[in-house]
Image 1 (tube, rainbow, N blue to C red):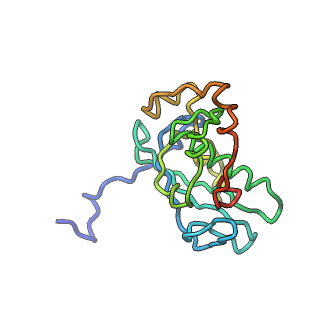
Image 2 (image 1 turned 135 degrees about the vertical axis):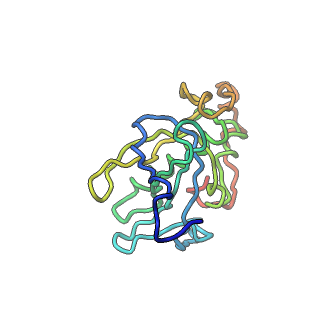
Image 3 (image 1 turned 90 degrees about the vertical axis):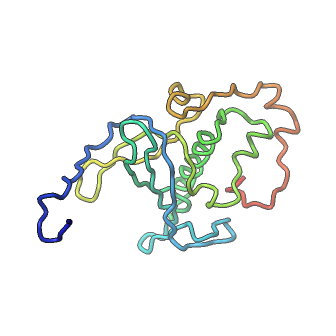
Length: 197
């Protein structure tokens, strides 16, 4: 019988060391909704968060390792959408999301075929909530100055260990002839905001 006054039979705490920097892991990303929407930017569904102190807007993401020696470990990172200081943070966020889509959907970054371009489009942030991809574990400092793991880089099919970690077979990049064909490079109006194209 479990009682709340005798803890001798309780399990020991899990004391995890950080995952070594540079480790590649397959993760599932979930977005913690912040309730901030701006339909003119395509930010709907309450997924974005706005900082009350800086005014910046971001996706507050949790990454859970799916398998291997670090299975079930969690890391947290932000994906920048807007900063009052300028476009750099949003550009880094867009590049990260593009990498996530390339990794998750097995797209070579240089594949500019119509099919690849379509696969890099999302209907909204709901398409990213629950997405699985290969990520590189990086280090940062927490509020106490201790090391913590973060995810800021998606590993794509052109990188050497992608197939081994993802379990996907790697498709070769589209040929230069196909990638430069007029219909593949023409962008049809989609009605989506420019950040989502």
